Length: 194
Image (cartoon, rainbow, N blue to C red; front, side, top):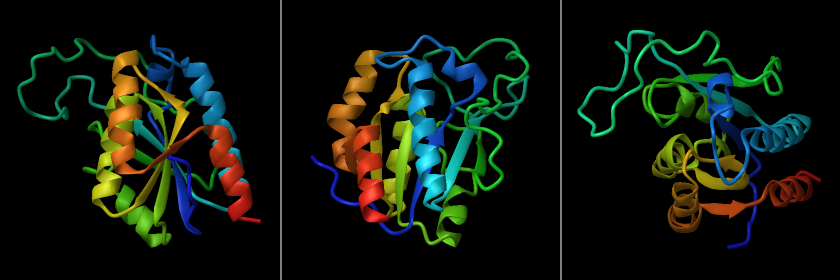
């Protein structure tokens, strides 16, 4: 599906572009490529006066604030390295950006993201980040359930598993919103804000 429009009040939401995640082995795009495309999007949104939201995930070193419940896959053992949950330098340092800290996969549950977006009259979000099938998809699902129009920058996201990335791009995201490349989104942003 082609991108149709960006609402007058659209926000860019970048998921987990932080030191301990962008360097992980990911596919099909490298963490560096995702950051570079996210920087392009953020600069364009800031230039238009549109909100940019930087979401990071963190947890207590002892795991005491981790989501409860049994899983078949073991959780990470030991304390993460210092600074793992700090937004990458290429995106940090812009005073006007909103910052959201989450302790779950998605950026809505247990945070003030919805409140911050609604206070600014936001009706649509553009999503990018790492990992496609985890943080990005969880946030896209919740955004859709909260009534936001959702646009997904498919070349500004990547995953720990390329098959999982493709499943989200091809099967899940078209049911939640519209998908497009960074270049297509930037072109649409320029046209709708002209």
